[in-house]
Image 1 (cartoon, rainbow over the protein chains, first blue to last red):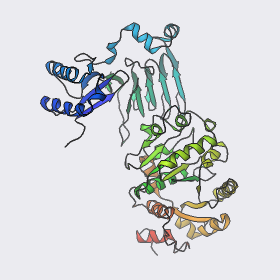
Image 2: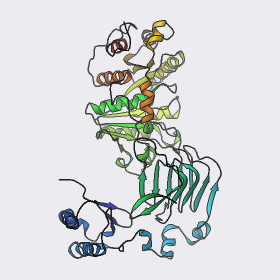
Image 3: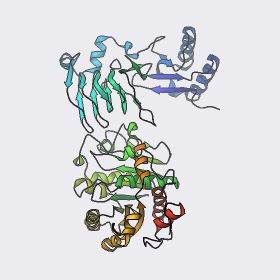
Image 4: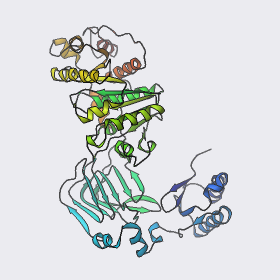
Length: 216
Length: 266
């Protein structure tokens, strides 16, 4: 039997159910039940943000939803085609979650820390708003922002955007060749093997509970 | 209860990290459970040599400060399931941990693993003191240069003063041709000066540069000269009484290996 047809990915907000692309809907239903049934008690009350990895139709989505909600007592909190889990919160709720107090929010929201130099290995830049680097970020350097990160140069280090849990934040660079990217509590690492060269400006965002890198 | 081995040298750039990576991987190849501990806080390299840099989330300082659990600080190797790395922090410095904390950490690790290899930083200051704190056995790496041997001698003195009796010697980067011409210190000279047990000799090998850049220890594909030498060293660490061939430059271990592989004509 092939393993990992269905993977549950846990985030702070809830579970992501990642389905393997080449399965039929009937197989998915079957697998899902097989996976949940033995540990029904464990999954009871769990929050599911959405299903990803394979396109599911609207009626399939509702069928899955009714299965996990009615039979297993789980709760699906995402909506169909929910690209970004952050749409779960409204502006006020976000502010409460991401900033320690109103003052900090007023102080940093929408504002940025600008640095015009190369960030080298061992250097650690932490800011509660946005970070903008005019220069390169080398391997071993670490950036951490509560909002987004923009590197006007080559981003080769590790960057953590939305460090307080803001999945709306993003990481962008003229060349995005990072060691590791983190948005909220989601971590993505560079592929093994030959060093990756991007060649075009790119942006990393959270979609369906995963970090996706795309051109902008 | 596992064994804690510190790999140290005094001088920088003689191959401590390469040695740690290769011996650790070699022990894992032999089926032992191994953890590599990078004690070079602020100038970590072991993760790069092992090709695990992109997997680092927590590091040694996080574990010591208990911001994460011990298990979270361990990175599983991508090739061997019984090999783990605990990386050093890069944004801190050596004073971030104390010898007492290191002692506790290595003790905890030794309870779960057969071997704990500690990659020591260069120098004899705080970082060195941290690295040797929990060790029960030590390997001194040197190269056939007067300066490296001088530093190794100093380190051996310090190890013995810290109750690490019987350090073992690893001579790295020996160039057969140069020794033959008499332009390089030969193995006997070095052993004479340092007067400790010889664990092994590793020849200078281009393959090491390639494997370091690739993040794959040379011992994995043991075809290179250095990879072979590390394999023998691993067997000796495991207590195998591998016949230690006369270390005459002509008929030494390396010469033999070289001859077998057709690198040196006799």
